[in-house]
Image (cartoon, rainbow, N blue to C red):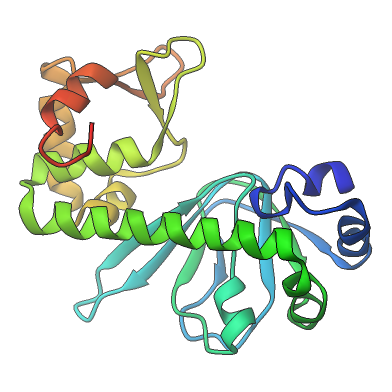
Length: 228
């Protein structure tokens, strides 16, 4: 279990004594695809880490639309804000596919983990990244057209292709509806724009069924929105 905990971003610099304490209290849980792990407004305070799989952090707008906020992947964590300030859950978390979770009791989290300097530093780095991405998303939603917003969010939701570093691969399990929730556009618009982007050969579906993107073409189109 300690080896698995060392793969979680916020625990990578923590000492083995703390990781051993966590390993004795953490609860492991497997969830199937499209499971609501946390609901917006819940009173629960526990902290979650993802050992395998990924999940979307989302909110419902006043008109009932799902708005994607973050994609949490293997090695990530969520739920720590409620554990820190005691407030209700500020967003819902939904699994994209099968996920293996670790659940950390919030009292143990407060009394032991939050007292660790290396963990707190890693948590601040994580929060800084969240703020930067939120600022970028606000800028894109305010200034970019639908096509650029879609490309920016698809890039954000992708990883560099290990087999071909000139391309990026979209996270598996993301539907057009889910992608649209991040970009602030409808599912129908996502479908139409993806068709256009495929015609331009900016994106394509690989032989394994993954959606891939040409990094050079995407960066060229988004040059006005990102610092490159």
